[in-house]
Image (cartoon, one colour):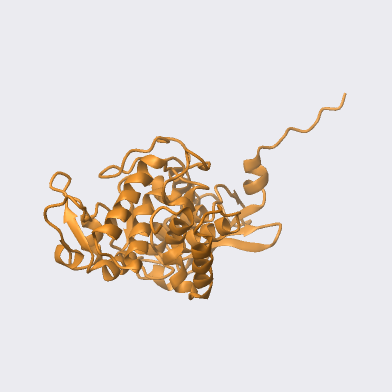
Length: 340
């Protein structure tokens, strides 16, 4: 009798076998990269030699730097939905010192980034608490907003419905500009980002993104909830409303007043800030990619198909650095929830 070989789980075949972690250490820097063996390409990499990282490190070559590089690499891998890798050590490398620091921090960051954790504050708890982010099906269980994240999210209608009401108030009584509406929607949808949903505490927003929201929404009207002390778009029944610039003097104050956390690091484009917080280049690129994939799906036939086609053509003509900030807003037009 021939005994068939054991069936390997998809996690091993899809990730552990083809994705290989390699590390390189010099007298000045620590570098780590994950190679996709079948294509011989770099899936992700991190190095203390990166300009944006050097400014936040006391040393770029010690064990602490190695641990930092491992953590950043793990976050970049999760952004690309690579949940597991194998390790390839050189002959002279042992599981000790900087090698151990990279591997351990990579493991810890990967394990911490797997299960949904309710955000607390003004955000309703996740029904998928303690479970990994999952795909949301269309139909009655579909998200009422933030559908760009439907392929992988901790959200359901309990989170997206309050966000939808917030956008509607901003559009109807907040006198917000179109740019403000789209950026505020992108901010409200942060809770549905799978990388945000697995982190404890309110969504962590990049300072640079908060500044963009404040610049666009400074003339829109907001009100402060007397019970929760959270700033929200002005509603028809609110007694006291004022422009955002009267409630806050900058983007950080606006995001904090609206119930979010704000990344206070000094990392700039391509640096730590954009890896660890929502609204940086890395997260917006990921959102844009997801939205681009959803555009390839067959759209719902509605009486607003001409409007959608005009919007898509306008989006194609928009510069790439501006396109990402409109990604989620484009889905609102597609869903016909707000501007109809």
